[in-house]
Length: 415
Image (cartoon, rainbow, N blue to C red):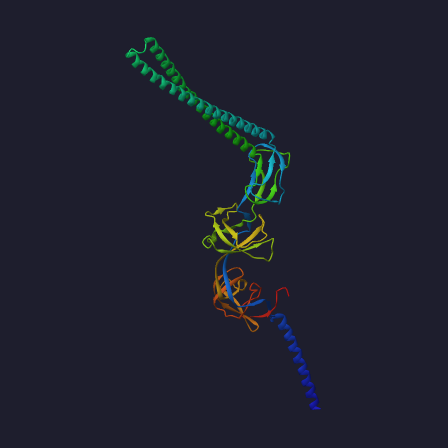
């Protein structure tokens, strides 16, 4: 009987102990047990790391050659020769204003030029006729004068010898006088030639004036015919046929889509980091997931202050590759300041103030100090503190993450 009582007593004791242990476990679980926190992780790797600077705000794709085409005169739009989105070549006609009256002025100037050319030709013909006639008369009268001089000299000798009578000498002298007057009269024809020469010069001057008047009329008429200043695409048209326009009013916007660049603002704090010829990464909303390469080719020499008192400077970036880019597209620009190959790196999100990281050791997160190098918002170079292949916590902002805490690794914090 004693053994039976002892056995019952032992069973009761064990049941009581089990009950107390269970109660204690429940109390501990609810009041003292801390479950492991869920974290995401990555590994320390080796590879290329870049030091980058991102634009303060989205940039804009722009064309090096772009123009707001304006009219050079007041007029009425007679015809629009292009449509929006149409490609045009240099000197193609874009818009034509009414120019009937200007055509008439050009025709009048052409007629005046023709009249001037005709008069000049007449003056040249008259000059040649007068010149030939004058030369012929001079040669003829000169020969007659020489003959009369010879006859007079011979007659005077004969008169001295008493062979020739005074009456006959007078006849010879009279013939000489007539020949001399004829020669003098022929010489006056040279003055007429000079007059003809002046008429030719006046005609040539009239030609110059007529040509100048024609060019002037054509220049005025050409203002009514608006042409493309370069090869490009018609971005938009601001007028309609029949509409009256004033001089200098923009009529259409023409851009050259083959010569594009991006203009993006950068914070003044980055002014010392950005320099010419640095490579850039370009991301456009129109092409999600794609990265295009560019290069810095111009940096604004001044800092601009906005209404919100932010200080920025503009950087121009040219594309290093062709693409279906359009003027006006928004673009995110990241300048590659420097880069290193084959260095340790971790995701930037895994670092705390760029001073610490949590390394996974067993089922715990162990805080470890690190020394960092270059990097960007995606990756950061590790100089000291970590080794290749180590697992590190990336969700360092999660509540409860402290040195030595137990952790549970999950693919994402949403699970």
